[in-house]
Image (cartoon, rainbow, N blue to C red; front, side, top):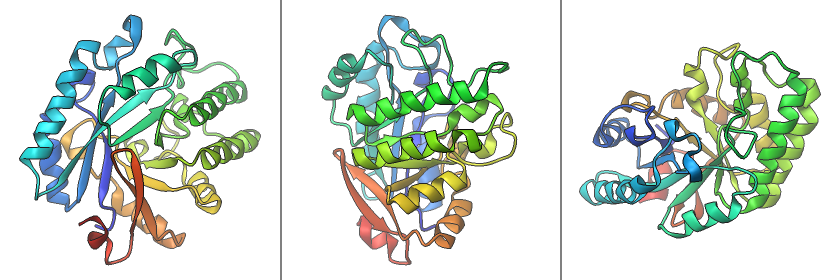
Length: 276
């Protein structure tokens, strides 16, 4: 497999993933990946959405476990320390302080909620409101995240389509503006393959949809491919399909991270050498 890194993997600490962390590592080794990274959901203050994320008192343990796995599997696979950081407007200082406390290899930024209190989901189900208005609000939050300087990778770009409505022509300007903000911020965009297993989507597809990924490539935005695994057998999910797409679009390199510094590795037959 030419894709060598999977940086978006969760753990049971988030309360909606299954399987020992070691099993995710073993799956990465089986697939021939050179790097995997855990990026569980960050704690938020005041118990916000506590049913789907780590608690504050678990964050030290999470970092210790990932660090332990990195040591245990050295020479077989590189285990990286990441975090999926929920962006909430008005909590930028809290998030910055949280990030400063640990030696992250990368931070994946996501928008799961449109309000500070975590009551308005980015993909309400069932959705009965105005689709365009909802996308407008979602993409504005995503642009705020890109401008915040808090993350290295933007997660599941068009995840609002989990409401059952794909972005269309009315959302094209918002999509382009948001991609331009990501480009201007100098950060990376993930192609997240979890959409292939989300039955609520009108059709199986990644985040972002491939037409948006093609637009990102045209803008020169660095990409990474991630599975958003919530179980060990989801590591590297549908990576072959994404490789085919990337080769067809003449994408020759992907991003890798270490200590929040980005490098690019080749998607040619010499991809392995770039990661040694």
